[in-house]
Image 1 (cartoon, rainbow, N blue to C red):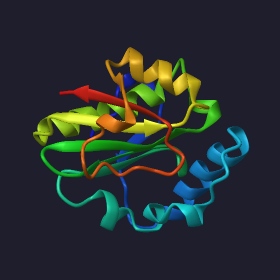
Image 2 (spheres, rainbow, N blue to C red):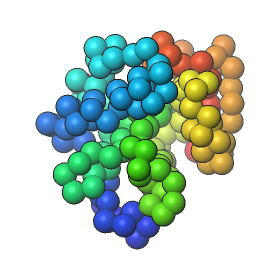
Image 3 (tube, rainbow, N blue to C red):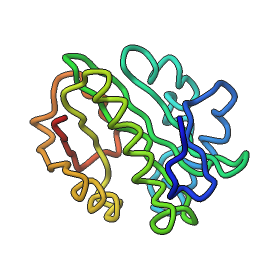
Image 4 (cartoon, rainbow, N blue to C red):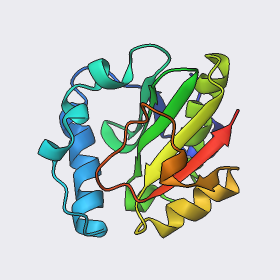
Length: 168
């Protein structure tokens, strides 16, 4: 995949075996330290089995790097009936917003893959604490939906309290 010009030297590529520890080292501190969510790597077994959890079917897991350092992630889990769940979207604090717009680049990669794969809808769960994420998803066309309206099979995380959907 070619780098979009606004990434200023960062790369986005599909997950490769061996990335797990660096992914955990990015995600868990954002969750637990930055946002105060009581969650550990052990609470997220999907991070130790990315190929088994995210890659079957039309899923995917992408990693953004600055040189060798993992600075962003995004995942797509297909869960039936041409539906996908956006998960594990995390960007290191120093890489958020302009000029790189790394979060937007990661989402664009996921949505391009989902559309090319024939998925019809992307859903996601997040927490009330991720206020900037709420604005980001809404700017990108995601609409809030009730938990009761989630499709059967949606991979619900225990910390999820707010839900969004995007028709492709």
